[in-house]
Length: 180
Image 1: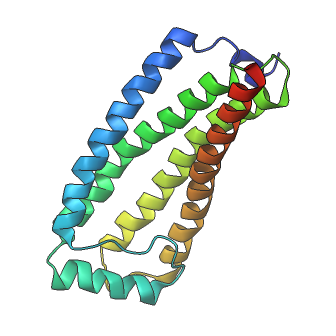
Image 2: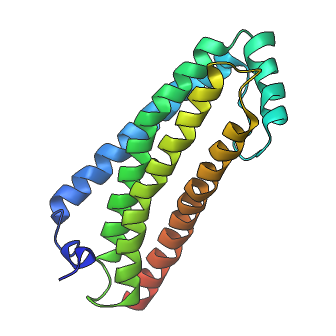
């Protein structure tokens, strides 16, 4: 029995639904709080720039011109709670949708894979934020490779999140129309 096979009944369907509800609430609430800090900071640096000079220029506007260092840093720290929220949301939603398909089917397996990938999205985001917090220790003179590393963790995070959304829509439609 593989680890993915254990996802057939772990966590239980009841606990998975509860996790989904809690993760939706957590994700929405923390996102609203983060948005307040984002507005106070005056903007956000491009997470996919791969360029130290570009990020330093963006930090100059956010942190120096708008005096947004504290709200911007706070938002990055709160993002760790957001990661738990959306990672749990992807995990539980993919399990719920995947379990609607027949055992052994590719759609069920893909649901389990996306459930695990949801956790990895949060992990990639955590490393991305670690580099953001490092850059904020010296926002105008940090080593340029930190931006490259930061962006390298952002790419798989966004790929997993977008892929999960697309998968959930397609899998839900297939399940709905194949059941009718």
